[in-house]
Image (tube, rainbow, N blue to C red; front, top):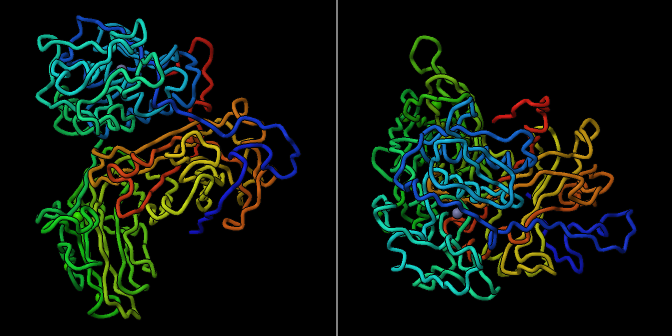
Length: 591
Ligand SMILES: [Ca+2]
Ligand SMILES: [Ca+2]
Ligand SMILES: [Ca+2]
Ligand SMILES: [Zn+2]
């Protein structure tokens, strides 16, 4: 992987004057998409009749208004449905004439009614509301949840500064008594996605309207990453969920039963369930930080014969969808000729799961650190996934193969993964304007693209305490047959929270849809024409478009964003599915 770390002077990213061949002194708007996580309008119609306690349906009927005008918001809404399916038993289906449903609109602001009104009810994802956590917040309202600061016991946890609240907005800070709402036996949660941030509906820019009684939590309240653990506990309690809609399984190997995995027989050796011990022998879940905890699976390649192998097989799994993603962390510390091979064991028609199909091979190299891996499985019947450790033929190994934090989901694997090591060091040694560019990735359609990361923002950034992360197109081998400009495609960038339990991950995710009317006209044209040559990818890179406040340095240090000091960024660039569907007049577009 080639990283370019250099200091740019003077220009904000995305300015036209960076483009070779375009002589312009006009300073156009920079590549700026400022998601207003700090201040966005939420309007709530409060209906006393609809209780926090009230369960609506586990399957919510949803209707996108005809010609819902925002392709990106639609994409975000569909992704949020998947988050609910992954993290709860709530599901969504298109509206088919039911008497009660949610009608998504692009109205003024981000807002929802609270609870089921037993009729078609509106939920607005307005301008700049097309953000994962904001859609989650509004949907939780529709499912019966009020704001966290509306809890009966909130005065034990926060101060409300009534004089600082904008006129007409004080209803957003109302507290309800226990006969009206229930806390579902969960504690007050500063981290809830339903909590306001200090500067919500404030009159004066410098005066907060709500502050935490423990000042340190002022940095936490108002997070808009994802559901908190307690948000999910409540959602799953209220909707009586015993498991999620989408099946998933995971294993951190912290318990002796190793999640029901079994040792292969007829092989040469076994995988060993090992506890973190010496330096270089730590697991990935806890990185050796907790005494007497932190385990992983290990195949020793330092002894034995060439081509010796050991199989570790999952319990039998029953897929609901036809595509799965196996994500895991691995480390090969032995010989570069050691291999980790992923297989699937399927039913060969006899009713037993015994036919092996090879899916992907990971080869050892000189990098003896933990790496993240993704393997797409396309299984439709009961199966096991299998880890095969294979000792190299000419190995002079003093180590082995490590596996930890395995997750299987029925959602697509990310199409691009950028792993940046030693990020704390990068933050310490870079300055405003320092820039790193990812390798070139290819989208499923064949577009080349990359991610630009400014650890301290551009040199003139309003947000020096934030990392700017943005998207750019790269010239590539398919450019002659692709459609240009590359419009109506969604770019999605996710900074991964590396929590071992996927349900507790609060990753930071943002997206936009390419639109030549919103950006500089040449932005999505062929990078070979409008881009600048970069030897690190041996390709042309176009101007980047993204977020100067993608993630704050404070936030990066919280949770598991910098686990093992690795920053992991996922990216997608895909056709917006809605742009393909051209509905006839009076045809209801549903999704
Ligand atoms: Ca572990
Ligand atoms: Ca064995
Ligand atoms: Ca053998
Ligand atoms: Zn709200």
